[in-house]
Picture (cartoon, helix red, strand yellow):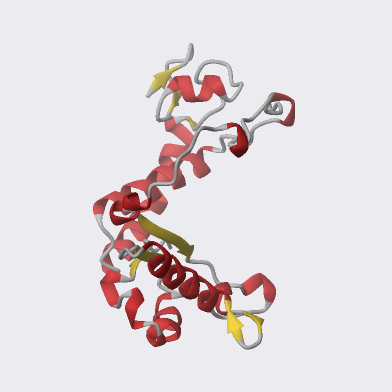
Length: 197
């Protein structure tokens, strides 16, 4: 918590230096809430959200994260970064300029993780976008599974693979990948994101 000159106003942020780096002045403008306004609205709305999340079995960390985000929203604070505060990267090293030696042994302690939690509702879909057919009857998930299998074969190692699914994509995805048992099954193949009301 960072205080302003006005003792009635508090600014909530992970670290004030993070806000400074975004071009804000001190802790101002980031997560500002006034106890007399946003606090009262939060007290009014929060119990229903909390009850719903607990009924779904969400853990305390997920509930706390949602509560924080809801508090920022109800405070009316701007979470936008003005375009004037954004500058281009001056330079980035190219891969060719780096002294890198391939070390396949690192794959034994590596997990290939793919984000797979979004439904393609904006595209008129009712399932994971990764289940879209790409070519010759194959979906994005088929291509990913084949990529993992190819790496395992090429480097002769058991590369771990997991999907970060949502409650909306888990069932269809696991069914689609059942034809690739070497990838893993159930908890070995996925973890599911938390729900939010």
